[in-house]
Length: 97
Image 1 (cartoon, rainbow, N blue to C red):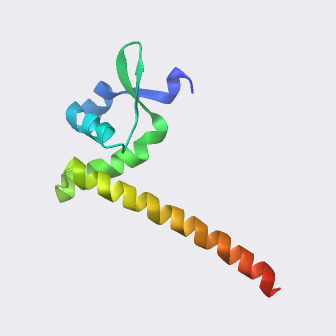
Image 2 (image 1 turned 120 degrees about the horizontal axis):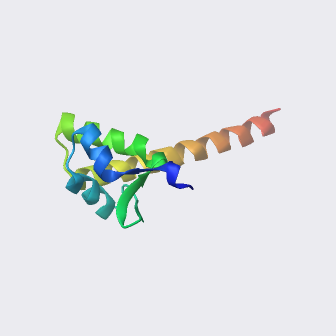
Image 3 (image 1 turned 45 degrees about the vertical axis):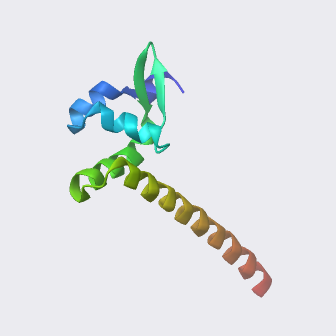
């Protein structure tokens, strides 16, 4: 990934009107990853959809970072299970032919 694939946390927080501590808390809870570039914390652009979802839940539903961690891991598990179901359905479909 190049430097263009990242955004400064400071800039992100200004644009989304969120405290930087919230971002660092999500990192502490393994929801997102932070990378230091030139001694300044950055987020990978690929993290933005997850982060935006977490911000919405935090603001609209008042869920704290610990709760967001639990929700994030449950959503990841659901996604994994859905992928497994799709694979198994394709295999089953091949046997039915």
